[in-house]
Every structure is written in C-alpha cells, then in structure tokens.
Length: 150
Figure 1 (tube, rainbow, N blue to C red):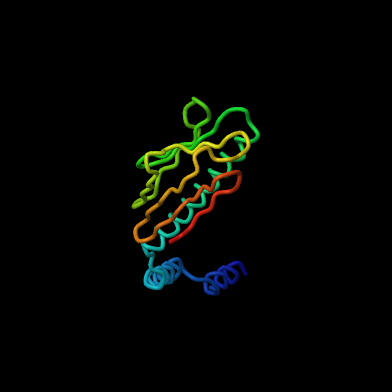
Figure 2 (cartoon, rainbow, N blue to C red):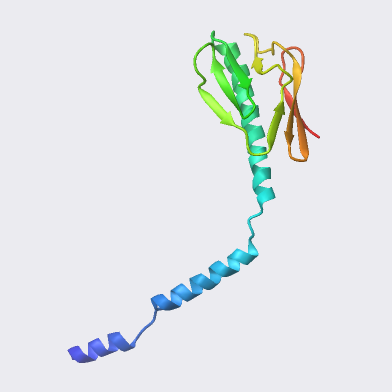
C-alpha cells in the first residue's frame, strides 16, 4: 500500500519544473527588452518636469514662510544648484540641477519675499533645458509667480 501511494506521488506531476520556468522567464525578459525601450529623452523630460515642479513648490514654500515666520527665507541660485536659506543659517535644502540645465538669473542670484509675501526684486528668470526655454516671472506686488514654457 505504501509503495502504491509513493508511486502515485512520483508519477502524477501537475506542476512545472524549475528549468521550464527559467526558460519561460528568459523568453519574456528578451521580449520586454525589445518591446519597451528606455528612451533617454523621455527620462530627461521627466527630470525637467519634476525639477520645475520642485522649484515651484520651493518658491511657494518660501513665500508662505515669509508671511508666517519672523525669520527671513530666501532661495539663492548657483551655477549647478540652488539653496534654500533661513536667515544667516546654513542652507537647509540644496537642490542640484538636472544635466543640461542652465539658469540665467542676471546677477540677481537671490529671491527674497517680504513679510507680506511680495517679492522684493520683481524680475524674470530664464531657464534653458536643451531645446526648451522656461521663464519664471515674478510680477510686482503681492501675488503668485508663474512659469511660461516657450
């Protein structure tokens, strides 16, 4: 009786072997390699979009903090990054630019808002990313800045 049960267990296979599963997975991975190519330009577009969104959120945060906290907050631009500063303390956030990113801040490298949320020096900042140009416009008076894509 025991031999019959063991023989039934060994001969009655209802699954796949490890070798069969590895062959199927390798075929699927090769097919995915050809079907979904990772495009470098798509990655750069996503990086640019995310960086512009992060810059917008940081500026809105600085504008909001300037109205609620007594300390002064600012954003200072450099050639390869920008920093968020609180008064004279060290930067509490540093954001590096994505590759191919250029910001033209025309020797006005710091953005500061007064205690009412208005920018102290209204201006336009140009951002160049490959073939695309963006303008960050800070209008005079209390209000929100906006970003134009050219």
